[in-house]
Every structure is written in structure tokens, then in C-alpha cells.
Image 1 (cartoon, rainbow, N blue to C red):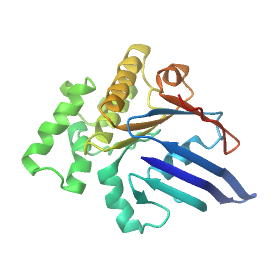
Image 2 (cartoon, rainbow, N blue to C red):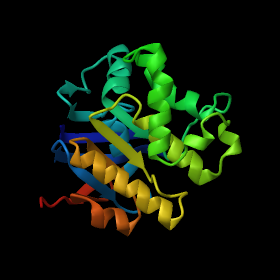
Image 3 (cartoon, helix red, strand yellow):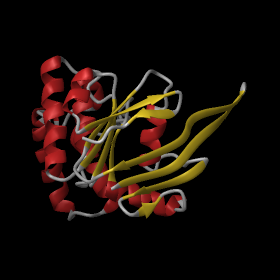
Length: 225
């Protein structure tokens, strides 16, 4: 499902080039739940962005769900992302002027993969899955940080993507809710969805199919089970 070969990502900074990732090789099968671990600045978010088609490699090949992301145009990538990858951003990025259910419906509206009349029902089903059905018609600002995090997870699942990436998805959640969300990710993986989570949390690492450890932009451990 995910295939990276000799991938590098270098950013230009006022202090000069910064190599966020260097010579990364990684293969992830369908249905795996992968935990990406490492210190802040180790390259976790950059790796997620490359897998999700949000960023492009400076060098190397990134292939996800059969698409060569390093070769695709921005127009092709935009539609590919909508259909293929559900992204849970670290800073959530819920649109403040839309209700929670409208935020979850937004990926469906963009892709037009479901009939218009079916979109709200599907969004409500997803919100029920994360325990937020009763908050559907509120604006994000009326929700707690943990509730907003759960709404972001529901939005990532809107188009039933084969790949889900999540950057610190339990960071704003209490332990009980975090446990429920991890079980949701496990259930997704059991159904064949490939889930890649960047995390500092040991609990996620223990539940993962495999842990990929990053250090200074390089993979230092990625054992197969």
C-alpha cells in the first residue's frame, strides 16, 4: 500500500538547507497499523505529509495505493488525496464557520463520491462512531479540544479512504477517550485500512502492528512482525 525508496526532503531555511528526511526506505502493507516514533524534529510529520501527498520529496520515490506521488501534478494529487487518504492533522484544521457535521461532510462534497442526500447521514454515522452525534450541529469553537480532535478523526474517514494518517491523534484526549480512538484505529486496520500514526504515546506503539523509529530524519528501526 505504501512504498518509499531513497526518499529525502530538504527545506530551505534562513540558516541554510535543512534535511528533514534522508534516504528513507519504507514498505507498509494494507491493513497495517504503523506507529511512527521519534523525538520532536526527527521527521515524523514530514514523513506523514509525504505519504499523504501533502508534500513532495526532494529526491526518491513515493508510491501510495498504486499512485506515484513524486510524479503527479498538483491537480491529480488533490483529487487523489480526497479519495485515497484521510488525514488527521496535528492542529485539526476544522473550518470555524461550518458546523461539526458540515466539516465532516466537506470531503464528500469535494469528491462528490456520495449522493447529496446521503452525505449528512454518513457524516452523522461517523460522528456517532466517535461519540459526537449530539454535537453535530454545533460550531467547532463550542467543542472542547478533545471533541474537536474526535471530529477531525470523523472527517478523515468521510470518503472511506484506504489509507489514514494521523499526527498525534490522541494528544488532546483524556485516557478513556484516547483508548476508544485507538480501538477505532485498530478496527479500521482490521477491516483493511492502512493506518499510519505519528506519536509520542507508548500506548499507540504497543497497539501498533509495527513501530518505525526515526532519528535525525532517518529510519533507525522498522522491524517486521
